[in-house]
Length: 431
Image (cartoon, rainbow, N blue to C red; front, side):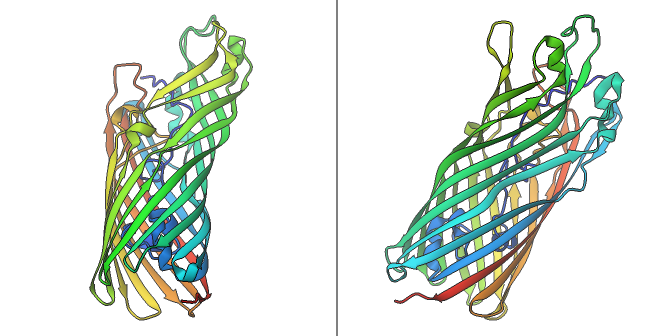
């Protein structure tokens, strides 16, 4: 049966939108190793992301570089169309750099960071999906890649030995490339009585701004509690698109376009407990308001002007749902130089069945993590983290309503990620 391939022009990153909707799950190798349960701990250079108040714990000036390599493996099976497809074995790298300087005898800390809070990619072998092209059996390209770079100036103040607060400005720069087939509906071209397929391609960039707030309360040496909040951040994207099919309608094949792409409001809370001197246990709950960020998304094509004289506008109804992640982490300090970490978390899929497709999959994951660190000297330390996200099978039905663009079949995605970071700590600040 013919599948109308109208997977809309964008989708929202993440899991291959690497989980957590459009956001990366664990920023930094230490967080990666502890299941991303860092809000109540926030004691390393990635605190600017998890809880800005935590940078007051960095009593020395510090600079760190780290990166994460992400390797998704997805499958799509739809027996009715004879499809059994697997994503290509691509690897996506997210590099980051952060630096902090304590001031006012260590009570005030400022810093700046550049990191990748979101990034994804999915590329499929066109030969596996040619049945989606109906009678033409054409091997189209199915590809998307999204990256977001965040520059964050941050400032935090320690009111006393127990309470710290912090705020960071989030300046997002996004990049999005996509290739997918499109179908022109029956009768849209004079003389055509079948579907006509062609390759669609686009590339866009954009910027957006938001704020992160955090507070950290160290009740005792063995218990700390943190809360963290990020505002919704909307990127205004502009770019160029190409669809050769438009020539048959008397329009140019190339056009500029505009689209807004949003990251949700995010609220989290966490605790860190030390039941033993060398053992730390962390627990986080992190909530993302996807329902306000990814409800529907409009794309306006500047040069594809319709008969009414207005620019062509495509609307994709995503109807994503709010999601709550539960995260757990453990760290054991084997010695003053060497530490081991592990963790786990549950990451529910925000996308409903009605908007599921293979370009931007959305699965529920169980994440299992492991990590370690080693201090070579008082100044130089190395952190390593690993996570494996086991995705569930999503069996999407075939909807009779033509307005529902979901791709029927069984969708699956697993993800592996490796993180490595190196930090350098300068001389101690004066008390």
